[in-house]
Length: 547
Ligand SMILES: *[C@@H]1O[C@H](CO)[C@@H](O)[C@H](O)[C@H]1NC(C)=O
Ligand SMILES: *[C@@H]1O[C@H](CO)[C@@H](O)[C@H](O)[C@H]1NC(C)=O
Image (cartoon, rainbow, N blue to C red; front, side):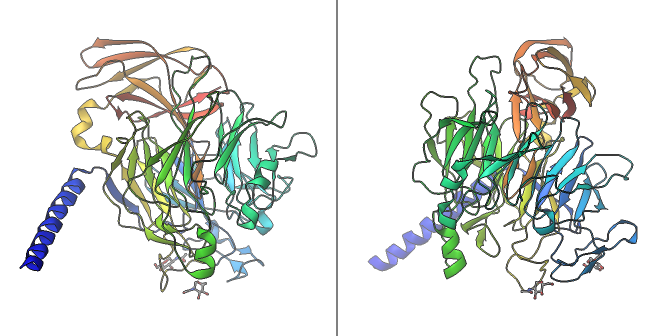
């Protein structure tokens, strides 16, 4: 009897839990759309450009892709493990408006490389493997389908593989670390030798397990660089090469950078006129210390980290606050949305980054609301159906959707007979704010026109329309488009501009006046997407050039 009753109650409990779970999934929002099932390559690296085209590439020495090079061209490729003559492309341009792709010609190996967009909107990408390790590659956006990669030999001083780049206030970029490189350099090169030692990267190298690759680098509002590797960070004055601040390790001490790959963002910067801006960094997920070795040597896939750590990087005595995520995640991608929320997608819940080492794909996107109180910041959204493991990517588009692609945990293009086959598909995740029920709240920017140039320290006027209710002074945000690879979005930056004036001019017409950023420390020069946000619902963005 007692056993039966127990079973009955267990069943009842289980069905109640089922009810609750299904209720939660009903309440979740957001929508996944398959954009293209086959773009020909696996989108390991992505960069949105000012003409709403996205440059993507994988690597050049692992066999033919599924898209031919332009004009019937072929490349001699002695370093290829599959075919020494390769007539396929390993880079493409995706046009958001037409949802089409065009093959591009990249000659040298871009595998695990890095990049930044220059202030003039030109993509500068650096490094890679073997014949690509010292290369710089330039891509100038065009609308006539004629532009292609231009490669520069010895663009770099040191070989750079798994490095991170950041655009600097003077428009140059810094290239930091990489395998075996405990130093940084600049592109274009500055004075010789153009290589400056960074012992922090040796200190965080975990005795050959690394955990310090693709460091999380953010330009702080004081002009210094916040550099996170493994489980801790420094603030670097890269001009004088001095460490101006050393941050504590994240409590628990587990690593968060490659191959214990978590992800990180500089949270939205606001109150930009303050003497000291409250810049905060959020690092989420990763893998416990030793996960990579256990997965690699013993086929043991350790549960990923289920925490985020957040820190005010300009505090006198900065401390990490640890928060629980709804689930464990390694190789997640963190994307800043135009309203200041952070979307976390992709990855797995056990194992590690690197080939074949991730398990248990995470399909559910988790949304983080930075302004909510601790413990009420996460919201889980509708799941996708495609595993996006190692070598997957996610970036924000100007229309507010998030472009999601890639996933290739294999050393080749392997489509069958493997766990998590090479993914050639592209999806878009539409956050809840794009749902039709919010159409009335969505602002439509009337002026300025897209591609307008703005300058520092000015008052700027935006005119927009909203059909429905406008809740008080709207927010105006600016987002720098990131170079995304290996779960890190380099240069990702969102500014909430200070409001000066807000008024309604006619029934559905409004005007807001905001202050443009005060300096290139706060906002490095370049093309940004600018949004008006009403009650958390962002407009479609416009491109503005800050100079
Ligand atoms: C791409 O794959 C399809 C089959 O899925 C095949 O028919 C086509 O020939 C491939 N294209 C290239 C360029 O490899
Ligand atoms: C993966 O692809 C490579 C190159 O095409 C091939 O040699 C290898 O056998 C494939 N691996 C599996 C497990 O199918």
